Length: 195
Image (tube, rainbow, N blue to C red; front, side, top):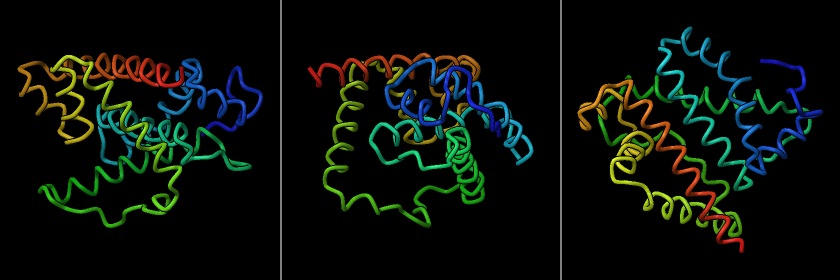
């Protein structure tokens, strides 16, 4: 991972603050900085380029959501790029593990319930879930299904492509477009709530 400051940010705290404010430039910067090394890591750990992209998007989404709801706070000496890499790495390691046990119904070995005691965080999380649900309802059915199949049901793109009677590459592109629409609706929903 890079140890130099990211372009446009004097410190990791500046970068963290930009991510907290949903600064698009910070998102792009994080992607450009972390993805190449993550992709190399996935390729050297039994994955393909598509696997790397999928795991990266899931991990990054989880990381950014945790920043947003306050579950992740920047620690002294921590590097944002390293933490983001670790989130994505966990997603791929989970994928590898689940590939060995491909039948449905397995419970994870460990559930992180530490934060459920904090009522304030629970309420914030409920607000986020509500905003995401509201945003999902604004999407067209094909986008809603695609995102749910991919992120909730964790279906492979190949299977989603078959369900939608599309090519896998087209589904990949459509998933990106749908995710961008969902982000835009989410921003609208959360901005309206603040007014």
